[in-house]
Amino acid sequence: MPYSTSSPAGQAIQNILDDLPQLIAVAVVDAQSGLTLASHSNTSLNPETAAAYNTEVVKQKQKAMAALKLTGETIDDILITLTNQIHIINLIDGGKKFIYLAVNSRDTNLAIARDVLRQQADVLA
Image (cartoon, rainbow, N blue to C red; front, side, top):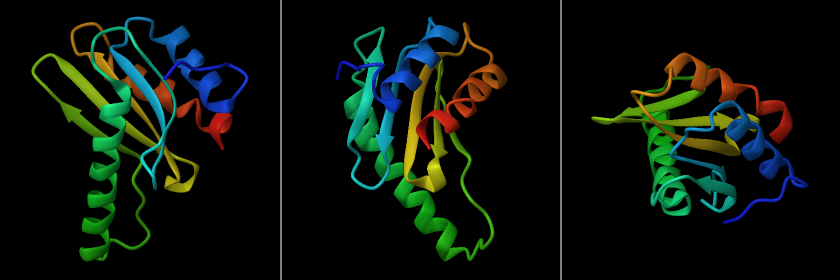
């Protein structure tokens, strides 16, 4: 899905691209429906498909937290490390939305990537 910087989701995508131009893919997603609000990919990885599947990851983690009675806890990030990639799901706006980011683990510092995502919370709230 092409993005427009006139929307908050599109502006967040552009901000992330400005800070992490080497990213693999990024998407801003409605956490309830799995609908991609804006996305971008520098490779063949389809961020809309990733968003749909990662919506289920978020929902299952929320169910697990409820089953474990982890009251007072909220999900900040879900981190998935692959052989050569890092995938981060950063929940924002009280868990109503999330930013999905995929980067090459050899090209990107995890702490910087997480900070870049956190900086978009105000843009998307």
